[in-house]
Image (cartoon, rainbow, N blue to C red):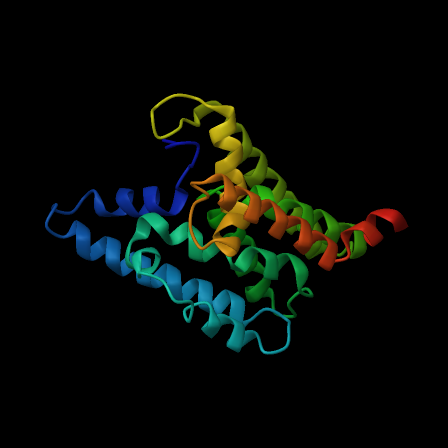
Length: 216
């Protein structure tokens, strides 16, 4: 059951698990599952094959904010999304359990928000440079979840006014991708949009993307 283009797999599954119980227990179940998801994200990041991975996992919870994201299962997708680039960019884990965990995490995180769409190019690049079995599996899962999210977003997306507005969708996508980093919140004004665009251009050139394109 998508909402504004989001499938919300993790929140929906949490609600399904809580449905057999009384309504008075639902908040505790939601909070408990949310805590488990946060810990799962930390563990997934901490076991990525990159230097100081445990520190990266700890830094995830050191960002100053209001606490809304960490306090509700509805927004678990935001935290889970942070692990997707690391899964895509780091070397294949040595342990089978770790590899299976990455696949399961990618599946649920990818179906909970639109972030799998943005992460898909990284998984494609991983497959291009490292064609091992795990990279192929990761790419396959990423392709399925990103395609599902993209189709769902285009079919079900509505603005806050309840109407489909392509420009509103474009600005929302820009915010989800770069706006939170550039402004810390939504791009409600033209100068926030401009700041976000300039931030994105700077980020792309700083990452060396033009050189990568030119070498292909």
